[in-house]
Image 1: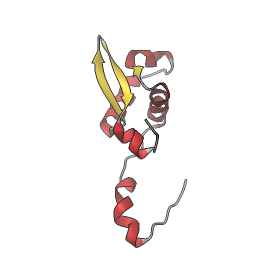
Image 2: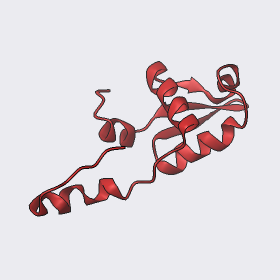
Image 3: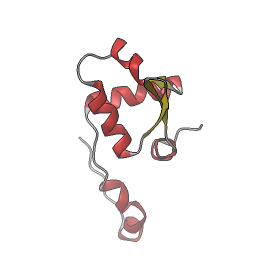
Image 4: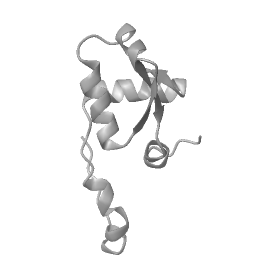
Length: 91
């Protein structure tokens, strides 16, 4: 774990970051795969992960890190602008 101490004059700028809910480990792995590929079919996640992947995808959508667009019987997952902003990744 880590500890970050912030000067009072910068506290208002970074206070929203500390209130973010952490995502589960499997959700982070799914997010990493989607980010690496750029886009990913939700139905193809079953080839990489076991268990209930749809709950983790829903978690990522609720947190705003993934955009999902209907594509036939499945959805195309793409990293959202919030992902690029929070993780400082260039699009």
